[in-house]
Image (cartoon, rainbow, N blue to C red; front, side):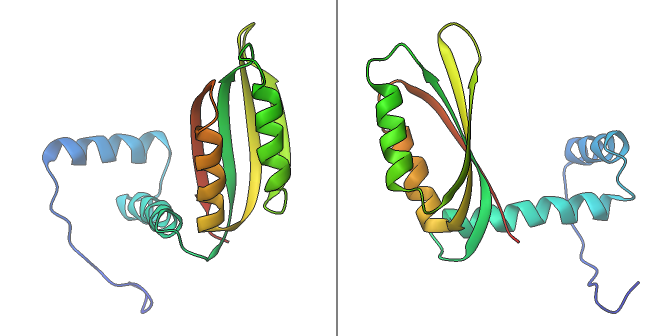
Length: 136
């Protein structure tokens, strides 16, 4: 074992071990340890930005909305313009006759990304907002 790695022990229910082993095989991880390290990196990034930190993050915000709601496009665009300093890209997709999806690529402080997501959630007609943030 490398000097820069520490060995720890986990106690898990057998159902979780079976599920972990299935994912390790399906996603072709080299080992359980690799899969758990990958999961922990995501866990740490999520913890930091949800804590309202000011650390710099990159990520996406996905918004699903009913485009028939009066004024929703204008409201979404207003919020995006007001917070343009953290939005680097926007993609708009028509999912169906009634539903659209927008994907915002964001870069900035965790607290500011959370503020943007919350402002988008508050718009009438928005059905779902999903945030994925990663560290550099």
